Length: 143
Image (tube, rainbow, N blue to C red; front, top):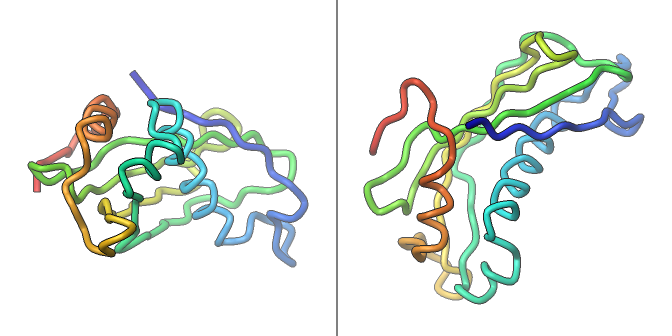
């Protein structure tokens, strides 16, 4: 099973060189991750109920090919690593243009934070179950 989202390149996504601005890659990754959560029942209502939200520790993008207006772009999502209690995790995205060309690789390190206590916590079962069904990278590992 793969998790892939399609995105359209908007004029506002471009920089003065007429290609995708660097920060748009990060926006696309965030969009894909949030769509995955919503598609698996982790809506903002659920996160508010459990007083929990995802936080980033690190976000890194390796740019391989430029993306220009009119390119067809898809973003995949895989789980790269997770702590035994699912409190901390890493995710990996491939950004593909025109169905077959690797444009970028995006990796994030993240955790679940209690929004009231402002500290990293073990997520509730509904989130653990959601992350557990996410496709894994070939080099997936437990932290």
